[in-house]
Image 1 (cartoon, one colour):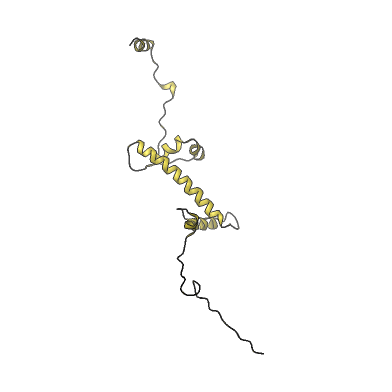
Image 2: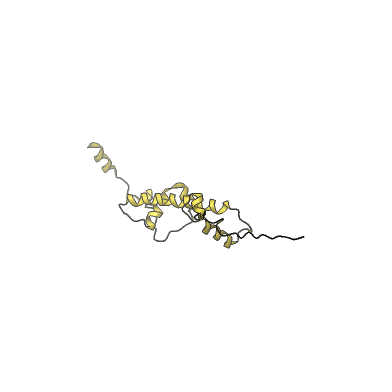
Length: 138
């Protein structure tokens, strides 16, 4: 009996000519945020022993959505103040004026952000009766 061994040497990329360009996980998912980097961060944090392939994709999508939402509102606040550059002040105005974002980021302090302009009604000067009578006659 003679045994004939044939070795199939696999060349990287398959059989010769068909070279495909690498496609990132972010491109496959249609995201801008880096899926692979977020997955690497999840693994290094060791929050669980194992992660599925969809976990980093989902997390990247959520972070991308939240970022887009905050930046859109901050851009609107920036435009309202006739500025072209988004500052921490614009971020604070955007977050505190939105009900859901304010609840989500309630315990967050943004450096150099300031506070919402607000004067309590008790502190405002009271209108006198003479001023009211004068305004009604006109």
